Image 1 (cartoon, rainbow, N blue to C red):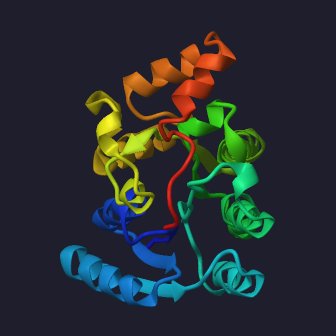
Image 2: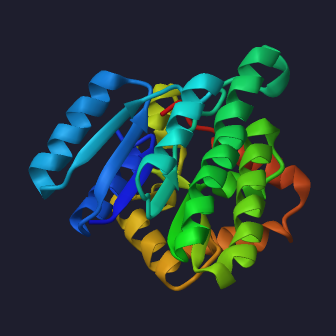
Image 3: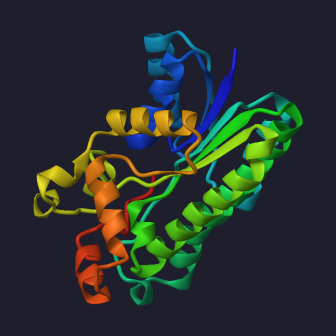
Length: 255
């Protein structure tokens, strides 16, 4: 049976991926910091879908703990990697400590780079496999370090997709907008200021993303509304982009 490794799987997009892949028959390796929530999630998924769920409790901003997760790719084949774990800062760049900014950089960029590298080496040897890096529509906006990190994830994934296509390995950046998850509540964000039509359902988002992966897309932007927004960004004045960004496209709390 094939196995998928998912970071940040206890809620939101990560949980939707866990359910989707379990329904499709994948055994799972679930990675997050909170061991208690991991155990609850693994038990529930195993009960609902009848698959094996291995848990790895790890803080991906800690180099030693990240290295332990990287080692998992050597101990048994992982056919699918979903890099989903992430968080956003409530305060602007200059109001955070440099340590807080480095922690965000480590999780959104460094961990994605290292886990992707660990995953694709054995995938290349097998001639098959897939990596989904959860980015954000925020990466298409110029707004703070979160947007900059997500822009990196999108470009990194799209470039790698071109390089690895001939080797049988698929890589895709998933760029959602607002999604009904617990992340915005953790930020203390007033969700009522966001128009209802901008909110996406995590399960439908993941289904669409998986279909895009199967079609060989390097960048998945779920829903027609967000495809239009991203296409329009290049024509929108920077002052208006800055105003749009303030409503929260550029941040979500820690997974």
